[in-house]
Length: 530
Image (cartoon, rainbow, N blue to C red; front, top):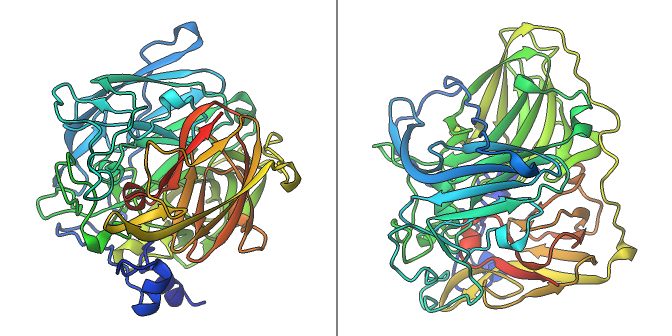
């Protein structure tokens, strides 16, 4: 398949929805009309040339207290303005006044408590994506933190489409102004991220800035000799669109995010911007020594897929050595030339600049992009230096080894477009999300094998647990599927098998598509662990 054909199949620029919404199933809709993306949101602001703005590194949040073996933090969710495009101020919703929000650095086995204070004009929910978290702190979409002066029915929220506004969740736990989230950190070291998870309005809240990083470390990983300090670089990749006055463009049906959820019909497949941001900066550049660097990569975009590669000024592609996945280190390194990364996925990779001549740029490009969305960022190699880091042959010995024969149950789930309450939506197993319904019940400690099938692109995320990918399309997983994951990118028409053990906590959790627009329009399901 040529690059052009592949980009058309994905939707130019990585659009996730090759569906013309006619009220029919996706398959029949595609049979009647040619595919269209319908998801690109063109900006109106003047854009800077690539590789001029320095790469920002999100600040690390300091704990307010460290007594009793627990680290305690406080984050205020508030509105602010920031200079994202040079010379222009952009209003944002933020965690503690920055986009991305501040990074929390945690130690394995040492609990973290984060008090979130909501000074935004609407309710919020915080989810630590990838966290092994008790249900009370997982960020269920109706467990809202209400603003101080909120007097509207908090659980109305429109519920995906007109006609569902009367739905209530009798199990919702609301608080006003603040809420303490407890994260035990009893899990493998890795990079997680936290973001808003309010029912029906996750997508526009993330788009406005509500996302940040949360890194877990332990002594075993620290002893490996991997690049660290300034040679360990977090990269949160997003796309956005800007109006001429610098405000973020987003096609909400209700821009106040108070009553009517959803987006204009042409964006039902997912919203794609025309500006690529890394750590909140447009097409940035970062100066590096000619040595190994560890890149902690997150796709924090609502809907855009990327296929990343590193290319020097003279056209040479550099290896991307994967050392970790969503849920921590691999057993052994895997070398790639390109890395496909769906919304919410993370890759932990090492890139070696030792053979790159000082003064040279190494561009990170998106092979699924076109025009300005093909550029992501660049590294400028500044000088040669001693490098005493290494990539061990064995990275970790604690990955789970669940096998098919251990599964106590096999389940099938379809992720498809469909009709929903007189409108169009995105469904799991033919049903839209309903917080009052239990979709799946599993027993604590059981191993289960899930078979997933998609109509178009769906990055499927399980809360609470990590999983291993067993197969794709009846064949072996891709090399990029290595390790323990919490999000799998299903391609159009693809089936996949995943296996996991529900061995953490009892309670109500979710699994859903992490195309945030799909999620808001019904593509979530309830998972009850007994």
